[in-house]
Length: 278
Image (cartoon, rainbow, N blue to C red; front, side):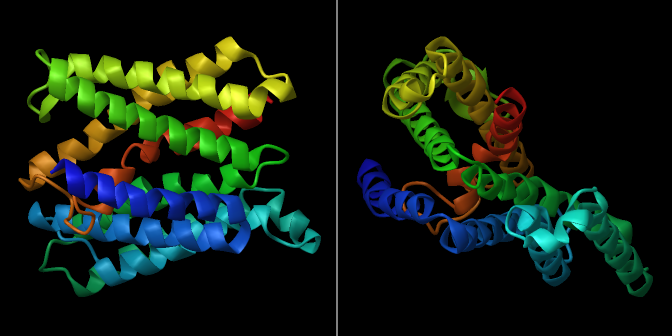
């Protein structure tokens, strides 16, 4: 099990780092593709709960909301009046609600509004948070560095949590949600995140005057804790769907949603923390 996990990381990590380095359209395409894969797996999970989403409509709405959300950071200046208010994103959410409501007029005997509710929830659960990765990368002047900070911290946290939980794990963290996760593994993930954040501070942020203590706490108690809680959120979906993994496309890691679930809470919160703090 470990070898496929390592091989997937050897192939996947350089591709992700390249996308982050290139930024711009390359990173947008990467995040959009990632979001659609995760959305597909989320739809599959909800389908196993007998609350089948409107998949085709859901993919379309996911792309529209993703595009409208990141549009302000890539639009030409002439669109500034429109982007200066919440009307653009409000338009996207309104379109989503109107379409999902109207489609139920033709499905009155089959699941009614449950399917539309699940569709909208899945889109907001997956596409909305991941779109913040693009906004984070677009920050000036340290967008690329903050994006690397998030990815590396989560990767190291996951690695520490996995191996420490495997070797030292004794006490269950949330047995009803994820039987294999332990308190020792959780604490190991927090320590790993703090160490990774410290390394990122040395490499990227020390020369820009950011405080070391704040950066380490942001990594350890922020990303290290929230990333693992985000993982537990997905575990609830898998438990209710009665499956072990969200998919099997990534050997040793399960599905895309299994691999990137830690970003669902951390990506938006890190983005807002950075723009509000600095």
